[in-house]
Length: 138
Image 1 (cartoon, helix red, strand yellow):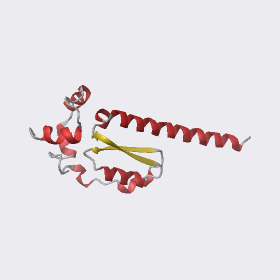
Image 2: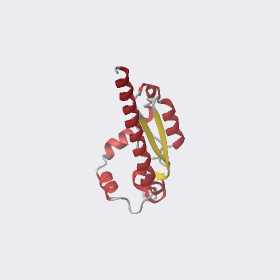
Image 3: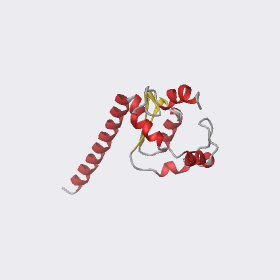
Image 4: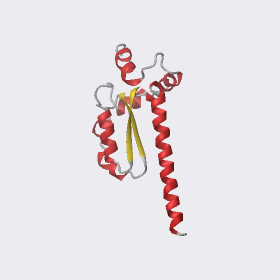
């Protein structure tokens, strides 16, 4: 575990040194019993109860606008994030080029610019749909 933080977490979990206080605070409340039950004791392979949990077939059921956001150095493979987005009818994916799993902290400008862009696009789509509906009855 002593080598895990400087060599793995600092590259794939959060690039910032020191970590933001909120990250440290959240991790201090981590329930390791539950985490180990679900994930298993290692970050490198899932051996817990989630090892056989597969919801891929349910992705097509998601119809609402969805943003799947990750990062180049995320613990989750960016190619898999993009594949997930391709399975949803109304989705897009964003890969933060300089971020880790905590891209909202270590690639903030890119992360939040893309998040705001997505929210505005969804709002504009809703507005366009409402205008279309209103024009049908004029």
